Amino acid sequence: MQSAPIKRTYLALENWFNYSFGSWNPLYHLGTLTIFFFWIVLVTGIYLFIFFHGSLDGAYASVERITHEQWYAAGIMRSLHRYASDAAIGCILLHMFREFALDRHHGARWYSWFTGVPLLWMVVTLGITGYWLVWDQLAQYIAIGSAHLMDALPIFFGSMTGNFLEGALSDRFFILIEFLHLLGQPMLLVFALWLHVRRLSNVNIHPPRGLAIGSLAALLALSLAKPAVSHGPADLSTVPQILNLDWFYLNIYPLLDYWSAGQVWMLAFGVTFLLLVLPWVPPRKKGAAAVVDLSHCDGCKQCFDDCPFDAISVQARTDGAPHEHEVVVDPVLCASCGICVGSCHYSNPFRKAETELKTGIDMPQLPAEEMRARTDAAIAELGGEVGIVIFGCEHGFDVTLLNSEDTRGIKLLCSGMLPPSFIDYALRKGADGVMIAGCRHADCYFRFGNRWMEQRLEGARNPILRKRVDRGRIVIQGGAETDRRVVESALARFRQQLSENGGKRREGKIADA
Ligand code: HEM
Image (cartoon, rainbow, N blue to C red; front, side, top):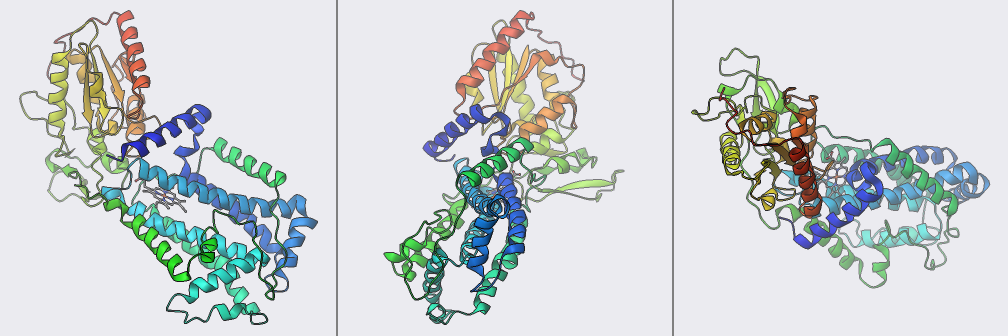
């Protein structure tokens, strides 16, 4: 479990955002919002490039023309370019904090975290070269600071600072920076981004439309209220005075006033190293991976479609069974969510009670047979007027805390692990109602568990919950570990509703099929 205070603080913040933004809560869309801001940066960057003069003598004047002469078009584009870049880095930092606070970087998920760290640096250095291109006093300040930093590395042999002595700087150097900012760094960033999400499936790259429009409107308003402007022109014969720094991108430079370049590098490398090893600190035991049982797999590929971590692949049948395909689990990629168990139509508790329940793909730590046994035990223990079984998950609110005379909670690995037939089973076996309490809506710890589960219940995703099952006896209420009040009041309402509908226990209605 993640350090409780950090997680609880984050969950409280998220809750507050939920009240304010509803389904557009930006905290649920930080990755896609960052990509949206990159689009703004790209479009405005192309526009600015048309008017930009890429030389030592021409750069500053061209940016001034962009800013002042055509403030209503190019000027706004410049401001949007800057503020979208700032918004992107803000989102990245929040995205990173969120993944950390909610413990989504351990185990098989180390990869996205690990590949995210260089992404952060790439975006920061892309911003730095951008500021450099303006060739104002701020650019001069960061150019000289960067030269000091590079000279401290053994590969430059102290040659960089010399470039910034008066008269020594050439257009060639400037063109190199221009090439990096306009082509080299963005291409590398796109490649790194592709690597970053490579082990995830169904990655969405677009934020909700309303959120995107709202964010663009906010950036536009900021651009009009506080247009981005330059400092005075660079002048290598003077020392630039301090300056309005963009703390999102340029925070490392003021350190050079107090520390040597070597010390600043040590800090940067140290922080990077700590971030890179975070997925293994503290060391964790990885959960057991899903196991395929070919004798109960007809190669329908539903688990392949549903796996959020691309851990399941499909190949030609190898066991001579009369099916075209079989699925294979890569244990290295498997995050042990169990969503594939919920996808498998063999995970059906109605199958003969006297034999062990076998399914096509199962989790060794909580096999389908054990899920059925826990469901049977829960129903047998139900007393009171209306009996409710709650299926929860290990990462949401702990449903066993709701156990009472008429309520029994069963914790699964994820709510997406619940095969819909188990709901039917619980109701027919004697429960008056079934509540499903996974993670907060729109925020499954395993990305898609609660979404797939809802779609199965709506009949939009296989395996579907049979039409004849009374939906009035089912309720879904997700909640994080801090959401006791929300889940409890949903349970109270559900109990009341069942009671009003004559929720008398219907024991022994099931016939093992
Ligand atoms: C350019 C910056 C970045 C962008 C555009 C970006 C975007 C994304 C996107 C779109 C996803 C997939 C989300 C989903 O569909 O569930 C993702 C996942 C992830 N990102 Fe980033 N990211 C960036 C930087 C970072 C950084 C700096 C870190 C941390 C060091 C990070 C850590 C993660 C992790 C751990 C996941 C996986 C979450 C999971 O397994 O559910 N990302 N990112």
